Length: 554
Image 1 (tube, rainbow, N blue to C red):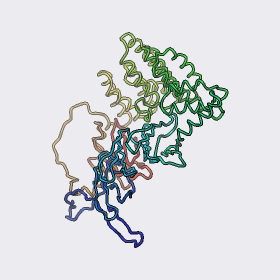
Image 2 (cartoon, helix red, strand yellow):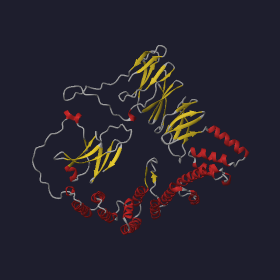
Image 3 (cartoon, rainbow, N blue to C red):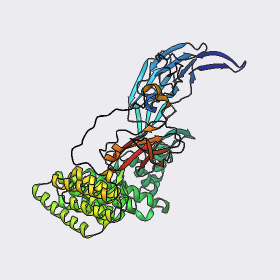
Image 4 (spheres, rainbow, N blue to C red):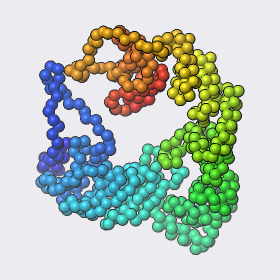
């Protein structure tokens, strides 16, 4: 935790500074009375300063300790190492640097500038979550944000002079920034993105348009600038001025993608516009590839919802699911989160049914019943597809019982049990009881009589309890028992699940005899130094176990 100044000439220590630590409390001792070794403290990365080198400027040294117990920004005298001022971390994430006598810290939602001379706050800027380290140049600080933006902040007064957006269709996001020969570069885990200087582009556009007002390259660059500023209406107008036969071959695909983007935003801005029909027709001609086709299906369904045409919207959602081809769909509120198309459609259909009239609900219920009959007459894949789209509809009960029979025929006890558990939890009382009885019979048929749930009263017996573990020998516990599994199955009353951290195996232990029933190797994520306790939940006889960064299903 020391910050040390070294004289380069004599190679000797000039001064050292160690931030004061809060009282950590009394030392713990083991069962034999000896002092226990101090365990490595666990902490969240968002609760400490991110690592940053000390900054030397104008006879001051500014640094941020990464010790989780020290939540402070320090400014020291460069010659003596004495503290000049300090500030609490607050929501700060990292020390961005010292520029023109200002100490800049970037937080989760705020960037703050302190005066180097006295530590007084000069200005603050509110923003969304940063996505990396920024860079300063020419009196401005460029800050990358997780929303796919780069904010340019004037260091003199903290005003946001510009906001540059990443191409919406580009992979990756905005990461750590650096300047190279006047070009702003962004590096993240997925991509390297270069941002050209806007002024140079504007000058090139003006030069080309002075020679030819309909120059395709100039108009294309002008539309690109409008898109990056999220001015889709202007961009769409410019795109339509570009003569298609004059677009260079290398720019045609980019022109098509950007025109699709502008059309989608324009259509969604107001489904009732007179131009919407023509825009949708143009969009149909332009879309290419499965992702854009799904986007078009989604747009058409949402248009029907906006027009209060639930029956057409329902069929559009069904078509979207049929055309998905296993692709994922981004959520509206958080585009970074993607879900399977059929699950997304299931949620949309649920919302649709909740908001329709009584007459439309009856019509849709009849349509769902028709689809259920088709699933019953079809195969396993048809039944699985139906249940993915309509998991909680009344018509799903018969389909789920038929699927149980399919899995029993395949001798897949776990899959049959899973479906029966869903029926027990979500069905009406009569069908729920039938599912419970079917599960008991299935357990007996598969030779798992111990898994059958007891239906009669339990005869409790008195007896002693052997104490095996106490707090004094906690440090010697090697197996980590999985508790709070959330299942009332008698299997988990009879057997205990332990994780052995040495052999990295899951052990199923007979609780009364403490004998191992069977064991299974566990995977770990390569290079992951996480040392947290394993966490598990059970559904029926399936166990989902998170261990060392890997999710297992057993």
